[in-house]
Image (cartoon, rainbow, N blue to C red; front, side, top):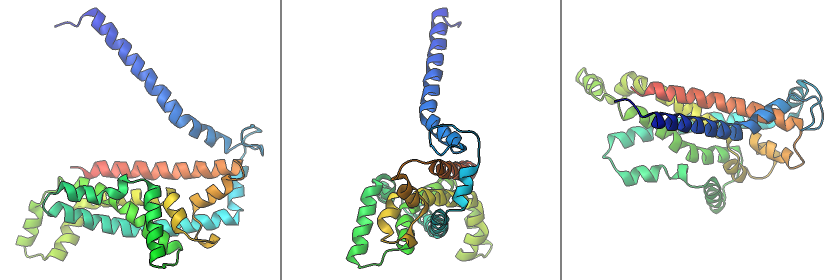
Length: 268
């Protein structure tokens, strides 16, 4: 049956309106980020006044010891958080999928994902204070691992939910023990999901400010990259801040896109 001409016109008008609305939303979301990236190449010392194209402020970053130290701290923290969260999240996902389905247990595991970061940060700080635990980079690693592990488990579970368990039974029938079956069969099968979880964990750790700020303690020795940006921006936005933010956005987007691609490939 042929569509009525009026219905076709309404459909075309609706599509145009939706496309226009989507364009405005994307402009609102990414316009400021694009402007920030453009101004990071501004030769002028003023953050919003264009003075010519230059890589000057990226060079300034490499000559700033405070920024380089904070980057090193963030990389160290992110490395250990990625190891702990990925390993713990993978084991957690395996345990949840092999156990009896429980909506309450699933919800309890995902609590760190949904509660506000500030609430989790205050709770962890209170916990460390009660135990008289000295704060530093190691406390940041522990705190972020609690937060990130739930995300890692969620990513790995997307692969496990459609996992063919008959190959595990075949491995056992052929004489392999549980440890051999895990390393030779289970882990290779879910490896794309594990790598995606690791990339997501690294991204979340690098980007985190609130939990790191409350878990770092006093002193510059435990200052991470986002904390350094916050300390610098309190004195005003400079082209150096624009350059830092541009690099952070590029790294985060690259890792997130890679993690999403691996997560899609992990789904059979």
